[in-house]
Length: 258
Image (cartoon, rainbow, N blue to C red; front, side):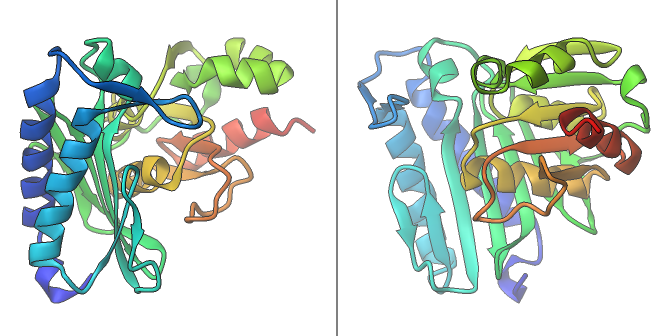
């Protein structure tokens, strides 16, 4: 990471800007549209991303920006900010407080900073792989659970997994000590904080998985695709996040039984 971004100050500032902007709209009267893939877009999505892009343009004019709503600007640059202004738009528009703000910083495609902001909860997680992770400034770390049989885990996008991979869904529903169904970024945040032990996720975009993977790895966990490969801009959107390498291996074995 270059010298003007050695601290997490800018990340924290951006999370605050995004939260303030999102909460102006949350549980208000939203202008809702549907994108080509039928996921809803709100005025809030665009407003948050615009505010974030304006900040980045002021402080990091030399960097590229890849945002969900306004696309890729400067994609040939080595250093790129990646932004999901409201992760969980369906949660947001239904008044559910578990929507998030995601921010990542890529150096030649490798995440070197991740942010998970939870505006309605007042929580901001910041992670720098190799340097640790924090929640509202306090250090956080993943749990030490190593076996799936002892794990508390989330199955994200379970309806899509059930539709596309029914046999895997059945195995997931019979695995672990406790399982929960979820969506979006907060289960990954709970993993980074040590409250849950693993998350299986599906059908994600780079601005969904790269920021959370950086936070999880900074907190001591492992985050890869379903084949155990490092997550990149070109990954297929299927993600395993786990508290420990051993638990991650158990989950890979569950997804790809012998």
